[in-house]
Length: 70
Image: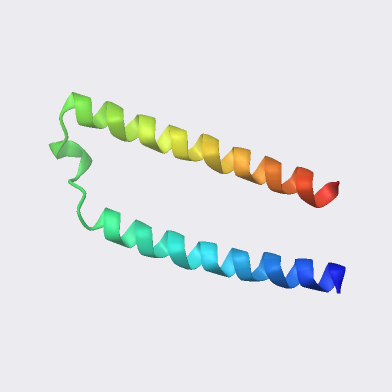
C-alpha cells in the first residue's frame, strides 16, 4: 500500500489545502480596502506580503517535487 497510500494522502492534502486556502482568502479578502484607498506604506506592505507568499509557494512546490522524485 506504499504507493496507493502516498497517492491518497497527496490527494487528501491537495483537497484540504484548496479548502483551507479558499476559506482564508474569503475571510481576508472581505476586510480589504481597494488599492486606491491605501496609503503608500500599506501599498508597500501589500506588495511585500504578496511577494513573500509567492516565494513561499514556489519553495513549497520545489520541496514537494524533490520529495516526490527522490
